[in-house]
Image: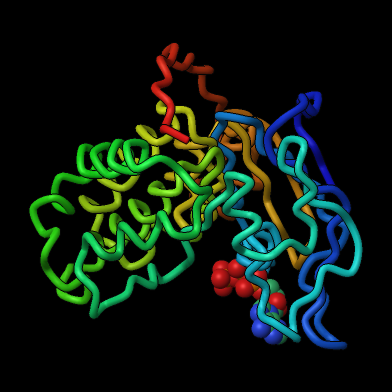
Length: 275
Ligand code: ATP
């Protein structure tokens, strides 16, 4: 693995160490993968089809396919909690939620019922906190308030992505795992989803995002990892990675030339989610 300016691993956040995951006897989807997603940060996971990105998210969220998928080596920690081999409900209770690829909303339930279902998996919380989170979800996604009584199956693809993210936020997560949030969306909707990811981050929730749209992922994230056939091939600050020839050629479709100037990021004022 090549690592550009590796940061020291601060305490807190998500720590994946030497993770090896297999499917059945013959497929080794991840091999000795280590990754850190700091508390409150945004980290992107890039890689070609089949590189193991979804497998990594599913191993963290406890949603590897039953029987087939198995963590055979390594460790997953979130803050003080050991999440290795935990059930999805235990992972949510620890403050980590996943928005899976393909959205997977309950199409026959209303938008509001879908959102309230997000609270069921979360820690037990006071009704006031749940209402506060519902209000914040509505603030982030006004369309979900407007359509609260409509069946979720009637929403557009982009709106369903918003609903899936809103449902995950109802659990008051400290870390959100996002699998291909822009998949199949028109550019305007992709930009809207990117804005919301920024706002989620500004409110204090860390994000680990898998994206085929590398330009978008590198713009959103402070730090990125590139997986290649189940191994970390490259990792580093997004700004540094996006200037490497390899990333520019393979992921950004550019012809490498001169180097760009570093740009500084605005200071942020986090307003945390209740819970
Ligand atoms: P994509 O971008 O196409 O979603 P990915 O990087 O998310 O790809 P994974 O879905 O994690 O990759 O797959 C990693 C490897 O594990 C691939 O070789 C894939 O074929 C294999 N794999 C994934 N799910 C299963 C499964 N349920 N059973 C067997 N092999 C699987």
